[in-house]
Image (tube, rainbow, N blue to C red; front, side, top):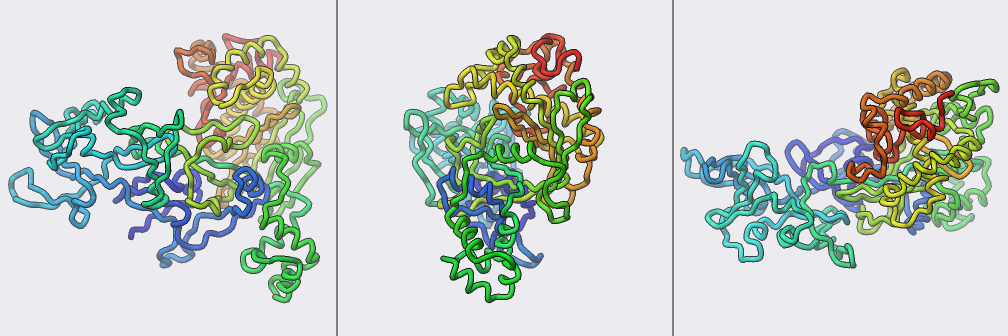
Length: 611
C-alpha cells in the first residue's frame, strides 16, 4: 500500500470518486465513498444540507469532510484509490524500419512482481525484467462509465485472438494518434486514429457499446448504460490525464446567520457523540445529565433542542427559496452590520454608505456590502466525463442531468468549508429593468438565443432570455472586468478570487470573494478594495472599452455559427476570459458590449458613454 498526500479541498474539486489520477509511481482510480477509510468529520451547513436532501430525495443525507489521519503514523485512514488501468506498456523499445519504435502492450496478469519479463531487445541477455507504465488510453461514455480497452479485440476486430504478443508502435515523432498503431506480433495491426473517428461506423465496431462499468464503486458495480433512444452509449476513446476525463459537479452555499444560530451551534457541538440517535424530548432530558451536554445546551429547552434534532434527522427544513435567493436577500437587507465579528465567526458584513450625490457609473450601484468574514461550504454531488453540465443562470445545479454516482448507496457527500472575505455590489434594479427594454438589447438577446437554448433541455422563452439571461450576461461580464481590476491591488492573485452572480427579476448583484480551508482567506484585501470601489469600478469599465484583439473581438456575434462560440459576444482571452476556477460558468455567457460601448456596438451598453 502506498500513501500519497492530497489536500482535502482537492478531493472535492479535482480528485473525487471516479477520478483518474496519475501518481508518481501509479495510475489510480479514486474509489467510491463506501471504500474510504476512517471517520469522516461532519460539515455543518443546514441550508445546503436541507436543499440537497430535498432535491436528491435523500432525507438522511449528511455532509462530511474527506477522512484524514490525525497523526503522521496513523495508517489505513484516508481516501482509497485502486490501480487503473490494468494494461501497461513495457519500457523497452524495438526499432525497425517497418514498425518504427515498438513497445510491448501487456495486461497486469502477465506481469511478474509488477514488471514485464521478456527478451532483451539488445541481444545481450536472453531474459530480463523491465519496468512498465500504464497505457494512456481507456474507454468511457458520457454517463461516466469507464473501463479498459479490449486491446486484443481492437487488433483482431471480431475475429478470434491468436494469442500473439501485442505491441504499441509509434511510427512518427509527434505522439499523435495518427502515428500510433496497435499490432499483434506476426498477425495484424490497427491505427489508433481509427478509434478517434467518433461518429463513424468503423469506430463503433472497434470499441463497441458501453457495458456500464463503474470500477470506482467496486468490481461488481456494473449498471445498464442508457443513452439516446434508450440504447447504450457507444464507447469513446479517453486519454486518462486529459482535461475532459473528469468534471466534478459541486454545489456551493455561503453560511448565512439566522435566528436559530445559537441553537444550531449548541446542537452541533454534541450532535455526533450524544444527540444523533435521540428519539424524543425525553432522550434530550436524559442526555443533559452528562456534563458536556448540560454545558452546551444551557439556556435551551428540551423542546427546542428536540425540534432541531428532529429537523436534522428528517430533513424537514423549508426549502422554497433557492440557495442563491437566500444569500441575495441577506446581502440586500444588511443593516449597518450583520453577524459576529470574531475569529471563529461564520459571517460578518457591513454596509458601505454611498454618497447620495455620486455621479458616473457608480451611480448605477445602489448597494455595496463589505463581507469581513465569509464561510463557504462546497459539496460534490456527482461527476461527468467528456462534457461538464452547464448550471442554470438563476438557480442551483440541474440535477436532471445524468451524473455518475459517488457511491452505491449515497449516505453522505464529501464537503469542505472555506473561510474568507468578499465584497458585494447590487445594481439599481429599475435601471436594469429599463435597460432590458432597449431595442438594441432585445436584438442582442435574439443573437444569443440559439447558444443559450443549446445549453438547456427545455425551451427558453424570449421574454425570459431578455429579463434573466441578458442581465446575467451583463453582470457576469462586469464581474470579470471588476475582478481583473481589483486583483492588481487587493493582495490576492486573480485565480484566488471567485465570483457569485445573483439574478432575479427585480434584484441584480454580484459577489467577489475569496476563501481557503486555512488562514490565507482573511487578509482583508477585498474589504479594503470595497472601500474604494468607485475608483476600481471606473478602472474596470475602462478595461472593457477596448480589447487588444479589436475590432475582431468586438465584431464577433454569438449567432456566427462558423466561429463556434455561441455563448460569447465581444469576449476573448485578451479582455474577459479569466482563470476557470474563478468563473462560475466556465467562461461562458460573456459579452462586454452589454457593459460598455465597444468599437462595433455602442447602444447596447448598460454603462453608456457618459458613465
